[in-house]
Each structure stands twice: as C-alpha cells, then as structure tokens.
Amino acid sequence: MRALQKLSALIDALNQWVGRGVAWVTLGLVLVVFVDVVMRYLFKTSFVFTQELEWHLFGFIFLMGAGYTLLHDGHVRVDIIYQRVGFKARAWINLGGVLLFLIPGCIMVITTSWGFMQNSFAILEGSPDPGGIPFRFVLKGCMPVGFSLLLLQGISLGCHSLMQILGIEKAKEAQS
Image 1: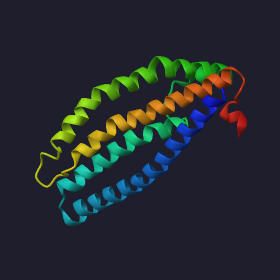
Image 2: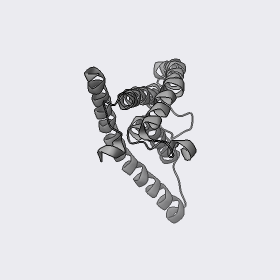
Image 3: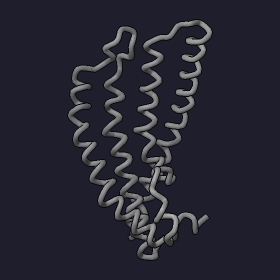
Image 4: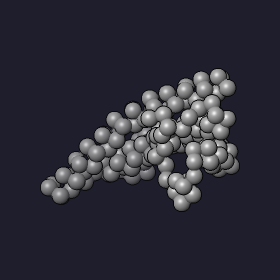
C-alpha cells in the first residue's frame, strides 16, 4: 500500500505542476480574447491568426488541464446519489467509475488519437487558412498527452479510493 501512496503522490504532484502552468495559459487566453474584441469593435478588423489562437489555447487548456481538474474534484458528476452517501460509498463509486469508464475511455482516446497526431506531425500540419497558425500539429499532440495525464490522475483517484475503502486513507473533506 505504501507503493500506491507514493504513486498517487507522484501523479498528483505532476498534475498539480501541469495545472499551474495551464493557469498561466488561461491568462494568456483572456488577453488574446481581449485584444481580439478591441480590434473588432474599435478598429473594425480581425485576424485569422488571433481567432485560431483563441481556440488553440482553449483546446490546450481543456486537454492539458483535465487531469488537474480531476485532481481537485472539479469534473461534473451526477450528485443525486453521490452527495447523499458516506465517504466509503463515494470511494466505491469513484473506484467503479475509474475502472469501468475513465480508464477505458482514456485508453480509447489515446490509442485513436495517436495515429491522428503522428500524421499531423509527419506533415507539420498548419492552418489551411491564409494568415492562420502554422503549428496545428502541436495542438493535436496535446490530445494523447492530455488524456494520458487524465488517465494517470484516474489511476491516482482509483488508488486513493481503494485506500479509503480499506481504511488506510481518510476522505479529503475529512482531512481538511
């Protein structure tokens, strides 16, 4: 069990570190959107590069921040049952969700996006629009990486849930 605790701590630290970096990218996205709005409404102009940069940054934030969001229990869930049960029952729900849905779903996305990413890198894919971003392949590379981070965080959640079921670890709300 000590190995599970160390593995979980390592995964948690990785996603915490990545999440802090993603937070700075979020600030960058806010600034890009602000500049785009000012350019559109004050100067009656817009650039394809700026518009593409907005959705590239959003995609990066979404993909790379998913593991961090799971770490901090920020994902949407149906609270009808989950909020009404004790922490051991929640641990069982989390463990079942990780094993039945999260891990298989992440593996499916990682394996299916891998070839997609390889093709994009092979041709150094860029925007098909004139004036667009020439590095679209970088964003496509974030798909398997982001889902790998989510998969790792799911493994960590599964480890935490198992340790809660076995009474080795207390629930997060009991610790704070």
